[in-house]
Image 1: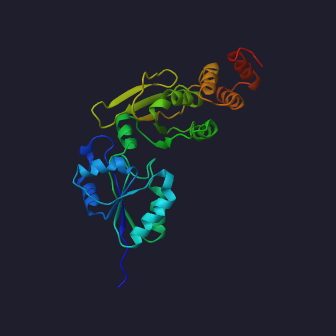
Image 2: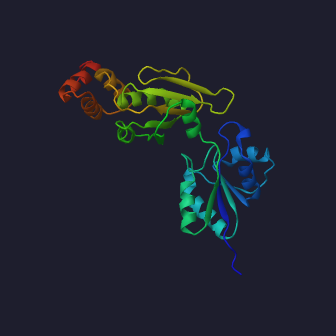
Image 3: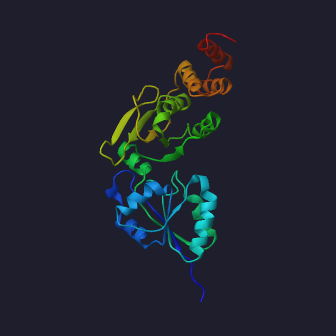
Length: 273
């Protein structure tokens, strides 16, 4: 008799407070034959603290394709696999999507024991209603992130981003340069003792000594006034945007002739050409 394949279960783990692990998620971990972890060194003490002792397999962004193929082979052998990340839901700005696609293509059952995510927790705490667009971590290249954020600058939907502390002020300045003076909510240390929610305006808000991962929520842009062109140009250039692209964006956003914006760029550089 042919052995049936196992089940892949995506398990949401706490984003800060260990008490947020659901009974169903714990049951999925206890009943798994193998647990795939983004970082086994981080997951092991968490699992042992809940009495879960199972074989662990490393599955992260650097081995996502080969790791997914290996996990599918285990599933085809009949093993039940639970997938966890360092915190939150697999597949939400964390590894998971590749193995889900491969498993489904192989006819393997994929299910989910949902848990907390920084995305929905931050949105709930922000008090911002209506539609939203989740952008995750912005691309590293200025050109790519300008194209991504710029595609949503005229939408009434809020924009939600994940930002590392060392990039926070740079990214806030970049967002101001592209989007203008919109309302913004910064959240950090979600579900932890020092959970913090701060509200302000892009172009004005400054964070001294940022610590911990941030979720940044920018209000929708319908009907906002155009930013000060020289300030917008300065912010774009400081965020790493090349001058030609920055001039083009400011001219379009502020409805100014490009040569006028070009003169502003020269002024900012002290006129040295």
